Length: 272
Ligand SMILES: [Zn+2]
Ligand SMILES: [Zn+2]
Picture 1 (tube, protein in one colour):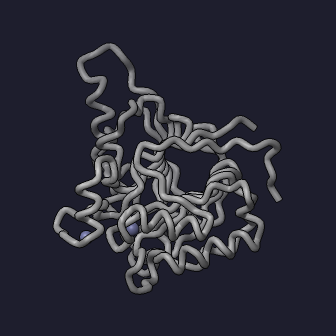
Picture 2: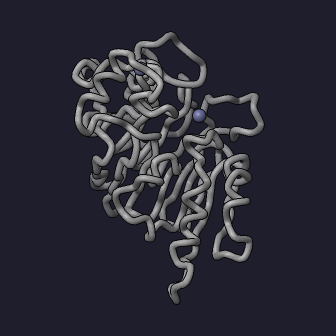
């Protein structure tokens, strides 16, 4: 199996980090440190699969190779529909054709996007729910798992986590514990750590929950000594960068900045 390349377009919480309205120590640190600000969590895989659009507005690479936009849920920091509209305007007035695009994710996320996509455009819609496994137009195979995130709000999802190609676990905007699932051993785990040192909440991980979830994934073989465990959806309740790095190192994890490229590519693939 070919390697998988993951560009972290954004690694921050819904309010980013710093929160623009806040002067706490963590926000002041992020403001004062070049390159430390984090946008809303979204990742670009192999240039063809975009998971969430929260940071697509400021992507440093062109998105024209994207063939599937995959949404985790319908919160606006994840399902920002405007970049889909810009895709149409990119070709307006030229003789270039809009390439086919698949928009996949929970029904609530697809409904948010529909008004922003021309009905006659080359777009297909793939509603997803927990337990589904399918091949996307981007060529990646995803298994969808239910997240623990706003389960009682029909306008949000139901929110999903994704196993991509049995190599990458995309698990943000979820509380702990993660769903029991037939996990492979991942090369890269991208795990919610929104709430940092804040009080425990049901819909996100704090640092204690993050450590607990990593331990559970290790116990089940989903994380081994080669797995890169990466904290994402990071908000300002996390301590300033160097302190966060130290805490995460003790868990065997890290918090690379926006713009970082991760490579998942061990051989052979180890599904079990
Ligand atoms: Zn703050
Ligand atoms: Zn959310």
